[in-house]
Amino acid sequence: MSVNITVFWIIIGCALVTLIPRILPFIIVRNIQLPPVAIKWLSFIPVCIFTALVADSLINKEADSLISMDWNVILALIPTILTALYTKSMAITVIVGVVCMAGIRFIM
Amino acid sequence: MLYKTDIHYNERMGGVMNVQLNSIYKEEVRPSFLEGVKDCVPTLIGYISIAIAMGIVGASSNLTVLEVGLLALFVYAGSAQFIICALLAAGSPISVIIFTTFIVNIRHFLLSMTLAPQFTSYSLLKNIGIGSLLTDESFGVAVNKLARKETINDTWMNGLNLTAYSVWVVSCVVGALLGKWIPNPEAFGLDFSLTAMFVALLVSLFQTIEHKKLKLYLFLIIIVTALMIGLSMFMPTYIAIIIATVIGATIGVVKDK
Image 1: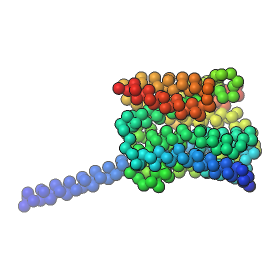
Image 2: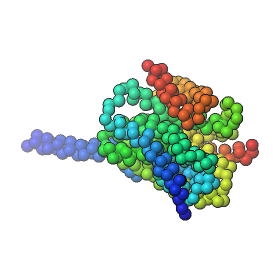
Image 3: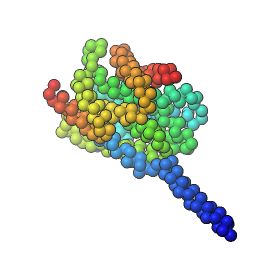
Image 4: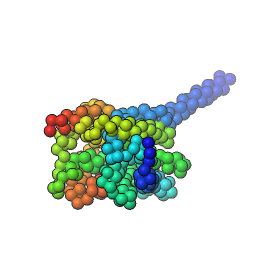
């Protein structure tokens, strides 16, 4: 059980740069009144960011070609979306998703 | 006399009604810490599987169990922790690792910006506390609760955040301990639990959208997905996430007249 000094400073540095974007808006928003158009803009952020995060997993980052999709993920996404729509349960969605992904990787 | 009693009676009833209304009002306005814990539970299976995968990757990047634990405790950001491990294993310099972590986590600015207006009435310290433990998932749970027209407050948010945080840190350590026996967590599909969790949060958000706005939101999903695929040809995807989200939300404002 030890902590390498370089790793220690990396952890401290990364902790600080992660904290800044997390807390800054909470400090700023206290002191200013957001205009309605900004509130409206923010109302679209949840759907957009979760779409972007799902899309992120579709993209194969290790491929050499300009653009490459991760077909295993696209395949696993179908039962996952259906489970989410049908059960409306996050836990069941995650279990079905993980099991499908493991199965697909095992077969492929 | 009768008249007076009536008034008295009415006052009493009014008083009782007020007390009842107040308690109903209070229950609605002040969801408890415990409710926050409960609302976190559905996300825990996702957190645990990702954190275990994270611990295994950490161990295979030659981090000690203590280092994996500290990383989870202080950085507490899934995707950043994975990237830190990958860069450490690749022997990247400290400056590159810290800068990359910053870029990957700028995304949190959008999450905090969206949620912060809900907490302006609380003290600065409480705001910093809520902000420092905000994750994609706790953000998702909170905006879903808001979208269902339920109220959120500081104690509920702390219940949600602290449950996720403690489970995350413990599971990362467990993963690091398991690392010796499981060299490749991807084979078990554990990494996919993150995507599955985002899908569930997205579907759940969709159920709260007004009918007439469904088309607009479906359009935004197509736009953001296309932007992600297009942009990621030229830039790392963690930057594409921010740009695609900002453009998507802007199109949303312009088209929603």
